[in-house]
Image 1 (cartoon, rainbow, N blue to C red):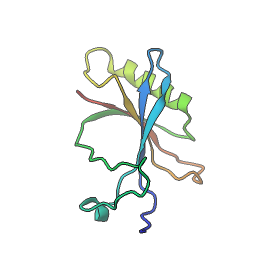
Image 2 (cartoon, one colour; image 1 turned 30 degrees about the vertical axis):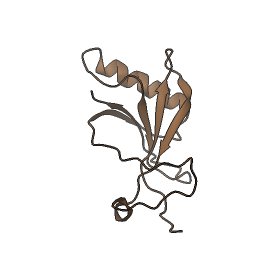
Image 3 (cartoon, one colour; image 1 turned 30 degrees about the horizontal axis):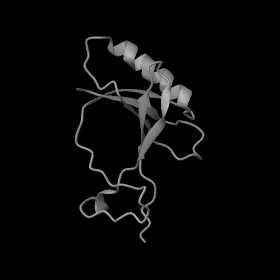
Length: 117
């Protein structure tokens, strides 16, 4: 019953297929504002879960514009190439993060995150 407003970033956990495309399962995560983190409200919809995300080290790349799936896939491939084979990171998923509301036309910020192993 309490409005919390939108938080940033909105993270989508993407699960890449062998060819680099994204599988049809994704998980969308929203940050709970600081004042609600100690005692978050219980979701009224059973498909909504509250998870605590542990601290992590990430490798990331940033790009602008209105991000589509193909953009995240392409930037994930560029990040993978830039990291090479010597860097250890999770290969079974990565995060696609957006920081801006839909009505912001310019100066948009999107990121791809690989989680360091």
